[in-house]
Image 1: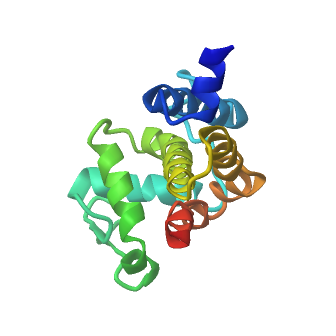
Image 2: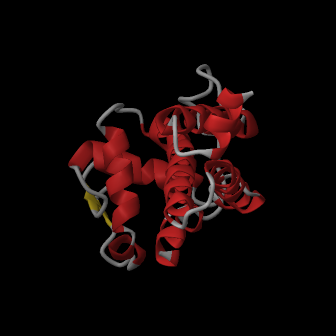
Length: 173
């Protein structure tokens, strides 16, 4: 009984709590998206920003950044200078660039990206709530609720940029 109280309501065992939340987050996002190892390299989102994220990943894999790709846009090159949103989404591009360091398949990057975004939101919210001096039980509950709300699952395929709301808890500080 004392161990459970120590784990849930004190600042002890923080690493255990973070690992438990991350494992739960990975399972929950994969469960909600029906992600398995077999379908990870296939497109799970063909509407909205689903293919756009795969395009960004393809640009990052081929050229190192998202603006120009000589392998797309035949007979010339794909030049995205006219899309102002590319210059406003630097963190998104850096995040996708980080994912491309581990795989060269753009569809895997597009399918793994929402899992990582959910985990970022989860961890940032947890540490912000702890900084606001909530007990760890309420910080964990609030972080899980905030990170995996209905909004996240309705936005990550249609508007990936809107699903990256991990900076909102930091604005509270």
